[in-house]
Image (cartoon, rainbow, N blue to C red; front, side, top):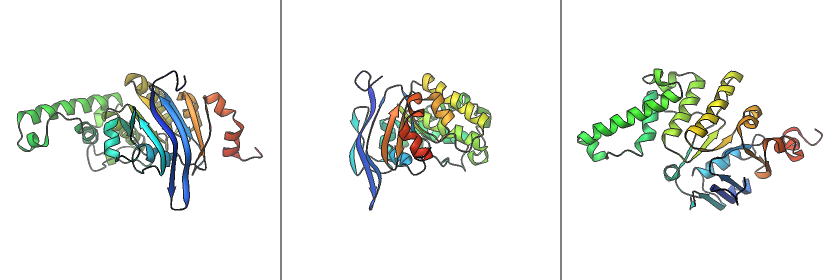
Length: 260
């Protein structure tokens, strides 16, 4: 499937980002078709998280364009890009640890709430019906991730693996078209990683999602991704199928050195 034969959801053209005299990304171009599951890999410091930060509004691009669902989002604030349909998780988990598991998910639903702040302040009937609907939707998401029995626990008291699952659940609650996962398997054991791989493949189909995945665990990337982009020192050095990437000399050199 190519950009010319499929509907492109995300189109990045020559995106660059500099921090003072350091060029963290240099003219990176990529596209993601609607419904694809794409991997983004590269050695430490390659620029992967910087690219995620451009796509989600943490940083504006120094140059280049970012088009999401046929709309330019380069330089938009993160909350606006989220409302345009892009949600993300983080390499370092960013949950509201002092809030319950349920409330962490409800927060994501509130941006689409039908009741207003005015109705909530006055405790009007629309507030209670709206809150009830959000609570039910949040519980439905938690059931999918096998977290419903922990709905009233503080997020900070959960196991590391379940915190990862909760962060993905919260991202899904925002109703994204594009889900960006930043090293979701970090810190997981092999069994947890295998379960996560199955979960990612399942939610892609169940929620009709397009997914961009940063991950160091090659078994996960090679096992679930349709295509893979490879960054090294801020530049795109390869893209292709998992088999093509596995056998690409530039990729092997970037990870293992020229002699290897």
